[in-house]
Image (cartoon, one colour):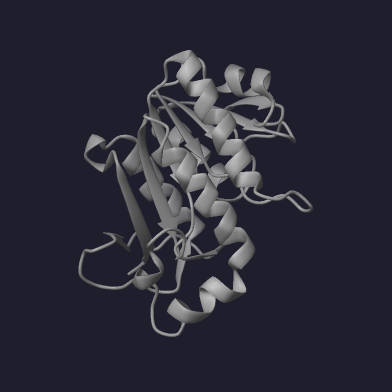
Length: 204
């Protein structure tokens, strides 16, 4: 596949770029820094710039948004995602996977124990950004999947995770490694059965 990663210069996006390239996919990374893991094509620019967004998504089979917040910028994730949605529509690209966060939308019930109550309080600002981001995704008309990880760690991959849609039985644990999240994102990109789903994920 031709996979474009928005925010793939570091963190989960970089892990995904490495995994996708190693699996033989053609990977493009759009980031402000212009850096990208070995094997990926790099585009330097802001994802909120229409020209940069168009250059990144045109010709892609799928787009994955893994951007974080930006200091001093309100609703950065939502702004980036809205611009990418517009660019995808203009370029005729359908498949969109977006990394959100557990606690966004109706997913707080999937959090374990006390985290179910304190996460909405401690992370009110980023969750508001993710809520706006998810609204843009769900109203896009694209073939979307939202992935909501629990707390991210830099520990080595475990190869084991639990992924649940809201309403499925069970709750999730408090963390997931970035490497495991990236591996799951790569699975989701290639799995049409996840289209239209918002899925919470943690390590098992």
